[in-house]
Length: 354
Image: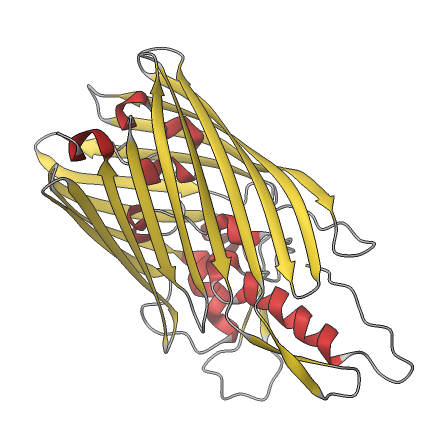
């Protein structure tokens, strides 16, 4: 993300440098939103799901069919009339002092359509501001806001399509920007074989108000996904392909972090292939309980220039229904000493008034 520079006759403004650091925080604190060496763009926080279940399945999943509003977060084609009157509240504790939170509401439209609306807040904590001489002048709290609206429609009994519109506002001290993004998604689900196939084009659009003279690009992406359930076994397996707008996704490996040699660039065929893939398995013994496990190879390798742990790239989630409420909790550890946590609360307003 490109931010304006303060005018100075001597050296670059420390405040500008700090603001660039804020931009880096907003896109680099975790691999899910990391402006990595693959040429990622600004607004990569859009890749952070609001669903604890999806986060547990590796952070990217567009084909898991559930009566849960959060699953439609990355694929508008998964929103459905069965989510009528459902409300979802999400909270995520990110690395450092970053906190994300949001709320979303869905409503059925007839017997084949549905719409939802929501807002999500991305806060990156408090940071120090300084003038061109390095003197601390105060603090500021950078933030991003995502206002979203989604509509879906059942094309056939097994095929559903949807569209999402997102209004994106960013505020980094006195600088601000505004962008518009659109997601297009489709899902085919066969209940007889328990196969689900999805395709999504995410984040089409651009900035309407820029930070300075340069426009920042949105992270446009094409994604394909499949999920398979098994008769007699309460397990589903998912594979998601993402970042399909480009093949090469190189990264640099620092080894064990003790070598003084330059980082080694990794861009083999196998590495590029698996950095496009996210794997997930969820165990669903009943409608009242689930456990999800995920592995994101890109998340793991993005942390190769940091001190990653054995668990880097893995994530886990669990959820249960208690009375009229559905609670979900997910955890991930991108690198050593950096644990992320996500919490979801789902409820149906109609059930609450019965």
